[in-house]
Image 1 (cartoon, rainbow, N blue to C red):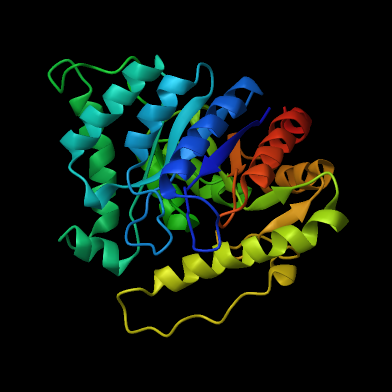
Image 2 (cartoon, rainbow, N blue to C red):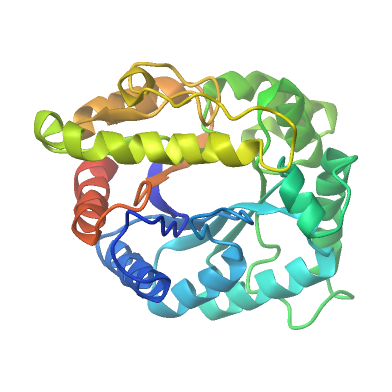
Length: 322
């Protein structure tokens, strides 16, 4: 059984109508609606210095969502570990867990953008080992001699947003759940679990699916395609921000929807609930994937499109995978 959740980044690009304040309020309304419709989880991302107002503080927003929801788990996907103090993360995460009654999943990763490390005045050197260390420190900080108050969960699950064979093995060595839904990572993840003496049956995987689900693909493709293009182009443009690398060429969304996943920006599926469910089954087959999540909104979509997508994901796609 694979549970299905939704993913939010709070982009407010110039082509979107409405203020940033309205967007934040509307997103909380959509979290509440998704929770009412049975979404298994709600996830919040982190980036800095994006020109479209990308969410910068996922735990702060998760606390607000915790107060507006009752059942959905709340996750960070991901919090950029090397930018933050382990003590600060431990305390903030504990607070979200308390407000939510024990519903937090803390996803952390290394980060990759030069501009973000410069903004926080920290080095990007050894960022993988520093992220590994945060897992160990958080577990210690949530013990009896750590921070107060303690979270509800003992401990809060700390997922590692690692990609590739080496990242999967690192997560396994730490006995941490792996935040990728691709079954190709399972052998290396499993090997790491066994190498470190962890029971491989305790392994858990999950993660984001780049996809848009619609009841009527022919009708909706001309409406959705420009937002997919904006979203992927924006990531690619900000990836080289602060470096001497040239701006990447614009993507063709029609080609993205036909590609198989080789990384988060290599594809963006588009199709009916049945089509997307089948693709997700193929991507996760044979791996201990317990949860996946899809974008609620892509590239600053109008509110009506976001609300409809949340309805289709929660009431049409989720039952097919559950």
